[in-house]
Amino acid sequence: MWKDQRMSTHIGAKPGEIAERVLMPGDPLRAKWIAENYLEDAKCYSTVRNMFGFTGTYQGKPVSVQGSGMGMPSASIYAHELINEYGVKTLIRVGSCGALSDELNLRDVVAAIGSSTDSNMNRMRFDGLIDYAPVADFGLLRTAVEVAERRGVNMVVGPILAADAFYTDRPDLYDTLADYGVLAVEMESAALYTIAARYKAKALTILTVSDHIKRGEATTAQEREQTFSQMVEIALDTAIA
Ligand SMILES: O=P(O)(O)O[C@H]1O[C@H](CO)[C@@H](O)[C@H]1O
Ligand SMILES: O=c1cc[nH]c(=O)[nH]1
Image 1 (tube, rainbow, N blue to C red):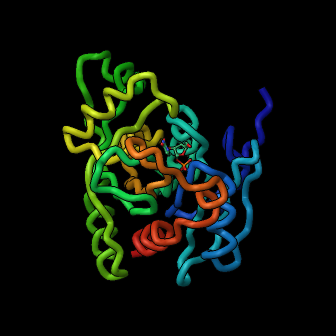
Image 2: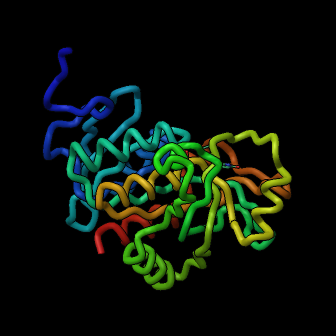
Image 3: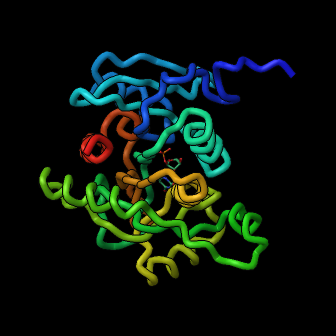
């Protein structure tokens, strides 16, 4: 089978075009917004499937931002190729999430210390014999906490859920998870943490509350694409620390 050796299967970058530190939003248009608003000399290295990737500099250091799509199958592809084909060492997801905790409000920033999941991917990995616990890289999390404090952002740190389905048939399970301290739900972190651990990279997930599941509150699609600047600034400062 013919394959362009200069690129991976899903990312159209040549070797060396992607920085060792990558921010990963699910939304490729959020990747574009981050590149245009935060990176100097940003260049688009991939438009494959319109899942945009850009590299530029932030405070003089090379940083990339790569869209990862929605859900763990998609995010797994990008995390795998970034680490194994482009030598990426640090991946910081910058996503939106639905709050489960009564303590959270729209636009609050959350850092995921660990990620429970209803995905079957890790059951397959461990033959259903182990309930693997995907966790953030401690050093990255500690740096992000310090950065948030320095910036005066009240970032809430705790466990989240990575769900396969955006529209759940089991809202009762969300109530139970909230009883166990799970702060919010999104759709990628468990796979990101697992793949980073497997291939010796560092990963962290930072989220902005876009919806409140229990209160039925929501932000707009435009806000999800083009705002959430506190999360992005914490992620960038953490990536280059
Ligand atoms: O805003 P992003 O990063 O895409 O993250 C969240 O938004 C999508 C669902 O709307 C899922 O990908 C979920 O994880
Ligand atoms: O409710 C939400 C909001 C963002 N992302 C999710 O996965 N769920």
